[in-house]
Length: 363
Image (cartoon, rainbow, N blue to C red):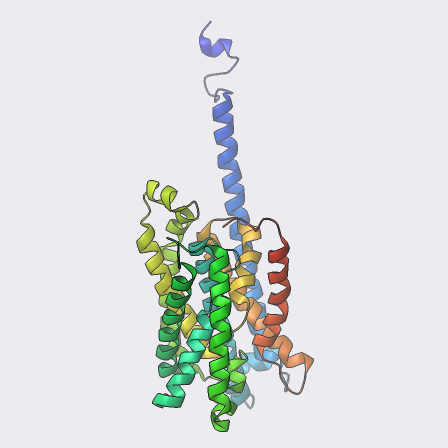
């Protein structure tokens, strides 16, 4: 009798070796996880479609879905076209793209710093972008959305560099705690200067009041499309470095051992964060806590794989900002509450929960 026969297996069977069984179970678990992730992405797409439909139909003048469809299909032949195309399509587009921008920027910062409390708002990136826009308007006469974008991106870069240098003072690399403290301090200083500059000029203050609260109802479709290329490039860079971020999450030494170029990954990550946070801030003035809350929420479902985290975050953040905008139109009707106010109400409890957790979800 052969050894195969003694083992009790037929020629067409896989030997019941512990390592073989473990490998098969591992492959099966990966397939199951990937299937679950793919199904979750489909669900998020469906939720995004639903949120878009609600955003186009809900408001001070409610419209049925059939009226919305007629307005979209025949822009010049419907009485409701000015409402849909002039008001609701622009704010819907802004909510989707700015939500994706802030969410993915937060996911990138958390991955690069291995800091579960990092996001563009807490680390001062949004405050730097907003302060630079105020300076551009007040001292250089910037008046269009493209000028806002360039000012916001310059401010985002400067704020990022300052926070990193302050956080790394006296050590070779900054710790998560020192980065958060430096970001909060810089945010407080920049917000104080921003408020001072806008208050000394009443006209400037009025023009920036809603913008500073995180409003998605401020720009036209043409202005939004001017900013979209910056956000698309930022998202493409984020997806391009996602695999390397998985290695960076293991630590710099381990990442190098796995063949990842840590410096290149961080530089590209900073470029992506600058493009995303800068463009998002130029559109909305900054929407709080999206970059903090959404990556954590999706990470509990996707696991630590940054490729899936970035995809899920882009979709889920758009859904959350749209939902906040729609809710803001309902709860104070016929007035409106800015989306940034409502996202802060959601994000603040998430931040408190993260601080109280002994161990944050894996990065």
